Amino acid sequence: MNGLSVNFNTDFTNVPEALTNISLYFNDTSDAQFTAGFPDYQVYQYRTCISDPSTFCFEKIGTFNNTELMMDKSKIREYDNTGNELLWPNINYAQCKESRRCSSCILQEVYDKVYFRNGDLIVAGIVPVYDGGTDDPLASPYGQLFPGKSIGLLILNSCDQPLLAQHKLLSILNNGLLLDNNTSVNVKSKLIGIAGPYSSSISVAVSDVLSKFGYVQVAYASTAVDLSDRNKYPYFTRVSTPDNRQTQAMMRIIKHSKYNSEYIQFVYSKGTYGEAGRDALRQEAVKAEVCIAQEIEVDDGENFNLIKEKLRKYPFAKIVILFLRSHQVEPITRIRSMGV
Image (cartoon, rainbow, N blue to C red; front, side, top):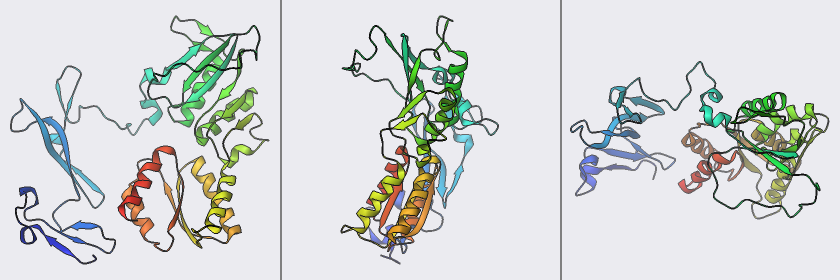
């Protein structure tokens, strides 16, 4: 399709008004490109109609073209809880101000929110909490592990931020847990151990604290090879396979199956998890005599269309290995449906 051009006025009949006077062409990657003067995307906001402020409708407020976002800020509207209309720049922002860390932008009630049930002994969990569950409480069949003792529970919200999780844990261990009735509980004297966190980067931050206090940590999904260092993390254990074992299995699949290939591409997330996977994969690729044609680092907020174009630069490397955080996987796998 390379070089094919389409003119809606001449090539089609009964063309919608929005497509009149518009032409597009296909490049060597088979992506449709609009001719100059027409943006890749148009940005709309649901707000009071400019023509009739008594009703709401979608109004165009900007365009996105060639990776550049252009906004007409005078058209942006925001509404408070009472329905009052707010104008730019006096609106609510999703982004942190330049002078603040993202962790400080988390609402105070989310930051301080914990689930606590007191007991003679306490098991703590560190998880990223975003919503409440409706399932029945889980019950263990091992009720006689601590005869005559009640088991309490402390759940901390990591907010998926390593420094925030580390700070909250250290604060509770040093100062105790402040309850709603303004009394405090000495968690440190009752704590058995910690379950979690989910990601490797947060497990590393939490393990730095727990190793100094001598508490056992059992992670349920952290796979970074660094956490296998018993000298540095003597109280850390996990139930998932570390990255180096995963990459060994990946190389065996590549070399000893119908997917046998001498070239691969590698997409990994920025941070402890992805970078540890990258290092492990490099070692195993050398042993298996597999060439990594390209490594692509993915950060939060990444433009996944650019990743798609990078992957297309090496069409002979059809196998793509992912070491990504969970929320980054779906946008990458969606690229497969785009013909990559």
